[in-house]
Image (cartoon, rainbow, N blue to C red; front, top):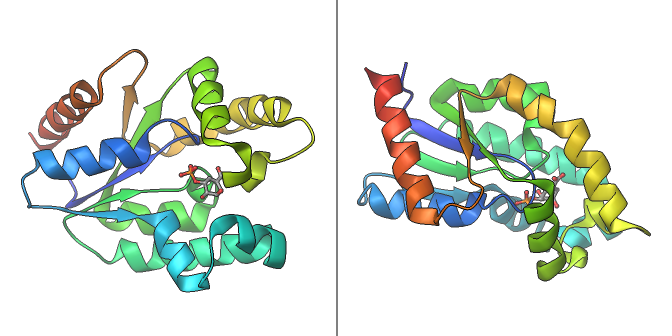
Length: 177
Ligand code: S3P
């Protein structure tokens, strides 16, 4: 069954934001793009690294729950979810109300390359003594959890963003029929 909104999930650095924006563009104004991390920053009045360093991860996760609650009521939106959002059952329940959940998958090598290029300070969950070790640990821990809540899986490896978006649109159409 096709739901009215789309939630893009997956590990940090899998391209959720870029793909989400392009998806909205290709759907030609029918949908609105929502970046969950941006919503959280607006709610907290500070950037994510500051929420983590000043208030702690628990406070960040509370904001994330509220953000999920808020977006779950919206129809015709494409939501780019933070990499940890669907690890909480409550968030999954909320997102599933109106959204088809799409998992973007990339290899650990691609993820590491992107994350290290962006700078680990942007991503506090891996901004530890050994960020590479942290990424690997979380990647293998989270992957089964992502898979267990998703409706559609998209392999993004070695694919142009527009190809990924076309694949998403095609798979959404199949779900609808
Ligand atoms: C997080 C991922 C980040 C952001 C926060 C926590 C995570 O979002 O929500 O730093 O726990 O994986 P992106 O996946 O968009 O980087």
